Image (cartoon, rainbow, N blue to C red; front, side, top):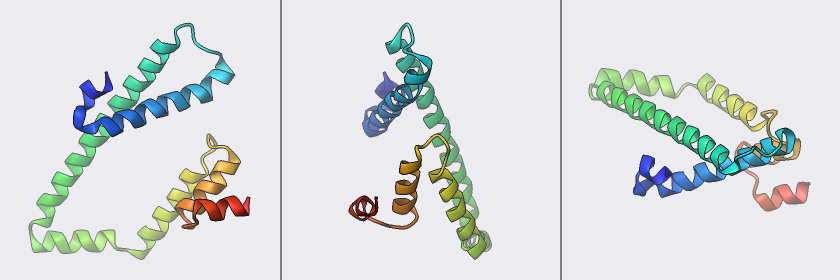
Length: 131
């Protein structure tokens, strides 16, 4: 089903969506109970995630197209490059990533490990030794 929506060239994305759907079930079902039709529930979640991915991908394509048009002229390229390489923007993006890593839906141990790996650059072995 997902490869029909996404195309055979994006089978890895389809696999990720299936895994995300199963993770959602593992999060939700213990608290809310197993639905009457689990396969339909999984299908609906996967379909919604696929639609979200397609929308996100279309948005990226639109932004890339706009940037390409602006970067064609030297004046546009200079202003865009300066806009992306500001010190405060880098600091803000790191802070935003830290908030994402520490989202309340992620268990505390995973938050710590994800933050150390993503922002701290530690290896999985280093994190395991720290725990």
